Amino acid sequence: MSIIAVYPGTFDPVTTGHMDLIKRAARFYDRLIIAVANNRNKKTLFSLDERIDLVQTVLSDFENVDVCGFDSLLVDFVHEVGGNVLLRGLRAVSDFEYEFQLASMNRKLAPEIETMFMTPAEQYAFISSSLVKEVSALGGDVSEFVHPTVGQALKEKFERSFNERASD
Image 1 (cartoon, rainbow, N blue to C red):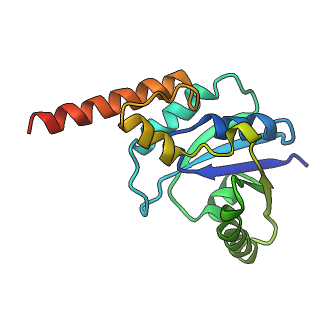
Image 2 (image 1 turned 120 degrees about the vertical axis):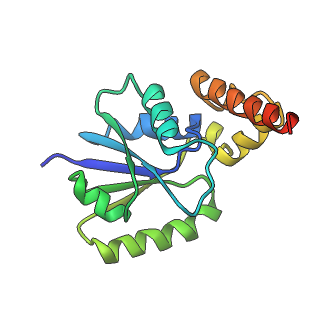
């Protein structure tokens, strides 16, 4: 039996913290699917298609990693792709309570899907997509926290936003 893990998230944008987890997790699973969520409850900077493209670009060297968008109940998506493991990242103790609730709900909905948690390497533990966007929006250098392609996309997105506001 092959083990297919699904790593879900909004990846708005994908960071070096995400990449660290993906790189390490890919060694343990036959197939790792990065599931880019179209979460209607979150206002994202990048569209679903843009986020999928960015993640695919950043992960182009990984042979056993695929990227898919999804807009459904997570356990339904996991079933759809033949997955049997949900991979979740824990950056800090504060993440645990929410992640524990999600894992418990997912276990109730689909007891055959196991949730596995990974922590990032220490040098990535403080990096979040929200912080990266905030630093980038204020003109800060995020090159240490994202792939160059993502950094360029952030720069273009915020320059476009600034130019649109300036022309109003």
